[in-house]
Picture 1 (cartoon, rainbow, N blue to C red):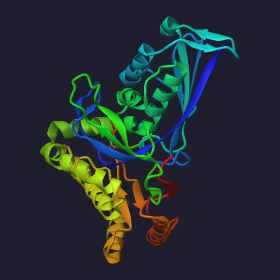
Picture 2: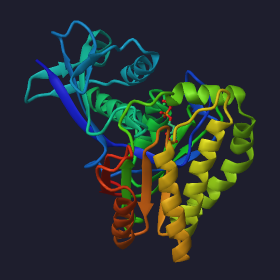
Picture 3: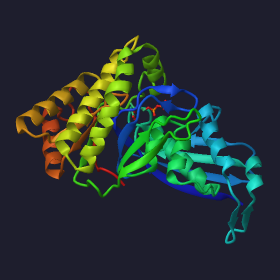
Picture 4: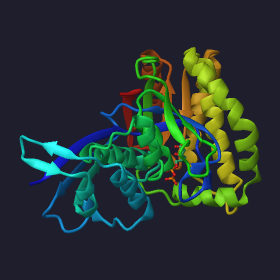
Length: 349
Ligand code: DP6
């Protein structure tokens, strides 16, 4: 017999960034962060996990290619879920797995991203969230979403925020064992459904500095990060929660853009400096900033993760279509920029 579970999880984009760990093994951050979960139709991971007595080892395929499972992060997630596995009974298929059997059963896992892996589009976020969710279902682990988020966090920090739709906060927590470092939903997907997200795929190439090694170097060398984590982010988190609660787009956009720019400033303050944005990213920022200023009230927020791709959040459909017109004017197809496509989607699941 084979027991299979398939899950689909969207990625999330931080509007107040996570950058820097206080514990590398447990993946505990130096500050809280807030994100918005995207529409699964556009950027998501689909993962099927299967268990069978005929499997003689754990194996995993990512986008059709077999990958090694030796990494500590995958093993941490698997160990956590296995320790919470329960009895499973599927009468229809004649499958009966006792709690104690899970230790000796092996898994086959197939995962697909509908967007470029490791191009700064938070593929690890959707990937680990989906894996943990699917494994929990397969093994009948009865954890709630927040507890699962603390497990997904051990795969990739940002993954903990993808267990919920809408607006999500990753609370950094205080405990040394990380049990209180988990995600909570601030507002569901219906709360602010005017927002429209446009992603300009400036480059789908693999980034040069991974988030993991980039943030390690920042923690080791940047004084600006210490100031950011202690003095700036705590206040910004309160302001962002307020902006989301009141659907106050002007504050939301101001905080989102400022926080993205500070994250990239912290990357520049790292030794040696890390450059995630490129000339095209900078030009996109100028276009949006100029437009927002000329309108008097912000129409669009921008944010960039560990790569040059721009994630723009328009206040409504009208602003989104005007933004797209502007972008196509400044970055026409086949022009001499590395911008190659746009992904347009609703905000969340
Ligand atoms: C810039 O979650 O990819 O996207 O925890 O080492 O796996 P690890 O890092 P990761 O870092 C994401 C950083 C970011 C900002 C964010 O998503 O908050």
